[in-house]
Amino acid sequence: MIADAHNDLLTELAFRAGEERPFAAHWRTPLRHGGVALQVCAVFPDRDRLARGGALHDALAQISACHRAVRESAGDVVLVREREDLDGLAPERPGLLLALEGAEPLGADARLLEAFWALGVRMVALTWNDRNVFAGGSGESDGPGLSPQGRSLVHAIADRGFAIDLAHASERTFQDVLDAAPDAQVLVSHAGCRGVFDVPRNLSDAQLRALAGRGGVLGIMSHPAAVDVGEPTLARLVDHVDHAVATMGAEHVALGADFIGQVLRSGAIGGTVELPGGAALSAAIPGFDGPADYPRLVEALARRGYSGAALHGILFGNLAALMARVLPSATSGSQLT
Image (cartoon, rainbow, N blue to C red; front, side, top):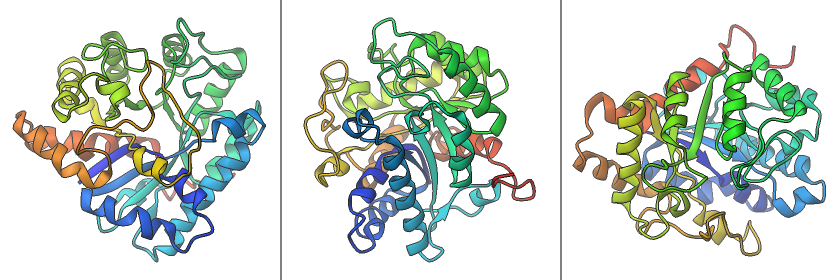
């Protein structure tokens, strides 16, 4: 089974809102064929709309698309809100877990966290590559860390019990969050290792060790921007797994593929997007560009010597265990209080 810490499928589902059963038509089969049992679904506002103040609208549209997918699946897909929702997950009955990729939908008002919690969001990243009112992003050289508003937001996120996603954070933001919220559950949903491919979007060995020291996990990202723009191969992706395992321990390594190709082909993202470092957003590892291709990664990991508990942890168990620590129990109540 696979647990994937990052997929932008909600962008496509919101774009296809006028179509009949878009999740079943476009995503259910690839996820099943890939063995995906737990899928973290990013809520990511369109960058042009964000600049025009449309972040909250986009976020709510994407969350609505997720709820619709669960509703139309008649019990075969679970919205993961509580710890008990992790029980019995399988490719035939996967769980979808909502995550804010950037806190822009909050405006500058941390009180809106309660509304997103009630809607099922259980993971929050402060920013994308760019600086916002809360924090600096990885797209800036020598980017700033947390602002005073960001520090307050981190405390509110931690107090409410969300996981904090440090993907896209600047180095200062990464460290500031660890310092500001010593008891929060943290992860990096999708990134690679600078020791393999040295770009700001990836994590240094010091960051990997700090993340492991907090019990966090790194979701290994499959996009060439993180893997290696000049050598975007499955073997190179496994090099990142090897490096992370050697630096952090296998129990801190997970998957966060960031398959974006299908979303782009749907037309849900307009224009040409170039990522920091010059990689095109449309780039992908040949033969590994969607969730249906996960068996190829499993085979590549097995060829590299991964098996047993270590392989299961990387594929599913490590991310699932972290989310089990994050999620409230059904007996504790997970709605607005």
